[in-house]
Length: 237
Image (cartoon, rainbow, N blue to C red; front, side, top):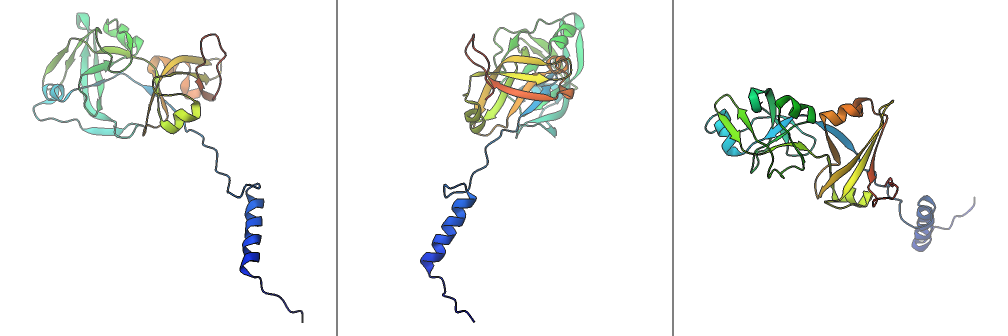
């Protein structure tokens, strides 16, 4: 019978270190997985945002919005309530969804074809920038609100958190491009405003016209691209 010498503590620690080094590629630490953002591209159909005051006028005193379906961004939802949007010469969209929660100002967001249907020359604006925009009439089951301004075509944009922004090499207020590949419908959408904060999920918002133009439902590849200075080639971050 062969006698065995028990390992002392120093020998055991040395063997463990060697095993760890071999498994980690030699740097003594486990290799972290590379961060890969989870990009969502959503089509934002026509909708409106309301103030608390306008909710009560349109739906009755004391009424609050009823969350019906959560949106991709945490804390936001499609409400059960809808309103009729009326433009010049009594042109109307009968059931425009209200999104919550309520805001400090009321705003109607349309696609280009929606604005044509209403007879309203809605400008492309970023959300909240409604100074000098056209108005409309909102009709609810309990009352009517006449907006003096607030009808816009929402400019395309991308929500992201700070980790996503670091990955793409951008910051809040920058602009990016989106390439959508689909059979015979490949499109590059330029000038997506970056809205970066601590908590948002990575999500691009297009309107219905843009979603239809690129046949988004049949897309085979989607890339979010860092926008390079004018005259330079785009770089995929």
